[in-house]
Length: 148
Figure 1 (cartoon, rainbow, N blue to C red):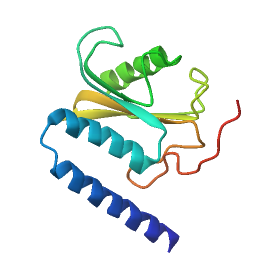
Figure 2: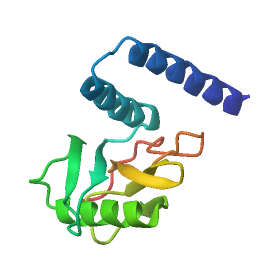
Figure 3: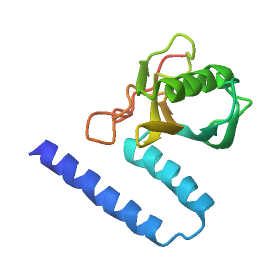
Figure 4: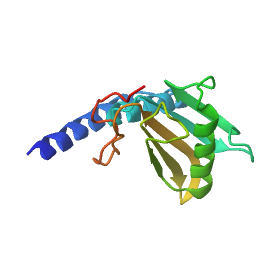
């Protein structure tokens, strides 16, 4: 019964998000709202969206959008390297308690693919116990803070 309520809640959130997206006509706003909605529905602490990798450098993206993350972040290089890797391999990566980014408890990176070709990457992260995938598995659904 609890699982049914959880799925119903996710479906309602998805419906509300879709209604918001349908009212937006500016592509930048759609992308911003999409990232914010992914972060909200997954209960993550933040994330980033990168589109069109344009070179051999991990940071060479034509479009980058950050939410609760910035180039000043101490783990910026590590996260951007992971984004480049996920883009190149076109494969989801889920890092739990990563040693290379100790401030995060979970980092989930998903390729954005069209016709099996990676066009970008979305990364979601949390400093809580875990990240729940949008399909109903779990992204930061438990709010326990990590030890400093």
